[in-house]
Amino acid sequence: MKPIYILKIGGSVATYKNRLGMSTRKTLLKEIGRSIKKALRKDSFGLILIHGAGAMGHQLAKKYNLAEGTGINPKKWRGALISRLVNNKLNVDITEILVSQGLRIAPVHTATAIIQKNKKIDHCDLEIIKEALCQGCIPLLYGEMVFDVELGMSICSGDAIAPYLAEKLGAQKIFFASDIDGVFTKDPHVYKGARLVKKINLKDVSRKASLTDSHNIDTTGGLLGKIQKLDAKFGNRLKSIEIFNGFQKDNYEKIFAGKDFSHTVIIP
Image 1 (cartoon, rainbow, N blue to C red):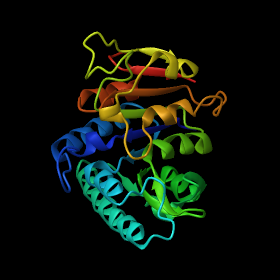
Image 2 (cartoon, one colour; image 1 turned 135 degrees about the vertical axis):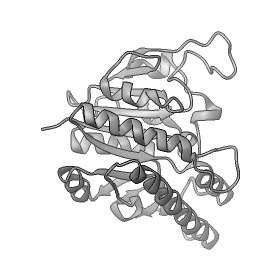
Image 3 (cartoon, rainbow, N blue to C red; image 1 turned 120 degrees about the vertical axis):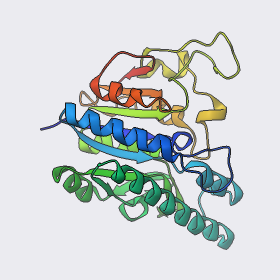
Image 4 (tube, one colour; image 1 turned 90 degrees about the vertical axis):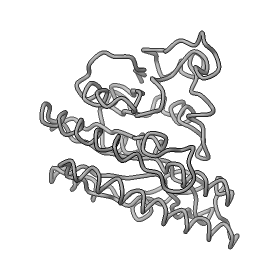
């Protein structure tokens, strides 16, 4: 069987998070699409793509206070449904861009595949994802509001989808395309002496490394929190969790090929 890799493109990479409204980074996404296609030509692997909600999704989550779910609050339900529409539009936009670069993208709408329980994934329709991989397609999921059996609707983050699918489908590697080179000893946006941590064990992440609050922590709890929860979950199947700068188009080919460059490799 071909190895399965999961690539999560952060919302700050897919969109301009400091702008209001829909703001897809179309030129960058085209370059990412071309890089992924080159990587698939060189190596044989199955790929699952996930993208973040981006600027508009987080703005709406903050505006309607959706972090703790909708409950029975009609205003929150309205905000949740508006958020889903916006996320669907972003997903269509990204799908069209990647398909234009020759990739066989098969969107799997998160809200129709995943149900949560108290903000955690409780059920996911894996069959459609498996079939897409078998047919040589790239399933594409994304962070959005989903039904929650306890909270009405709640946020399902792309950062949570990635490890869940890795565990259920036996993925060998998870790649996070971020807006910085990886995890650092301190916040690199604040401290000049911050050093990139190139390799670290998962159990040591919270003690020795940092993901910046301003760029990596959002309404979903942030990437670091989700990475910390992965310990002892995968056994011997997952070889690495790697965080890299998603703004550099050449990094995508390098990450799939297993080349050494400035990024962080986390060993489970």
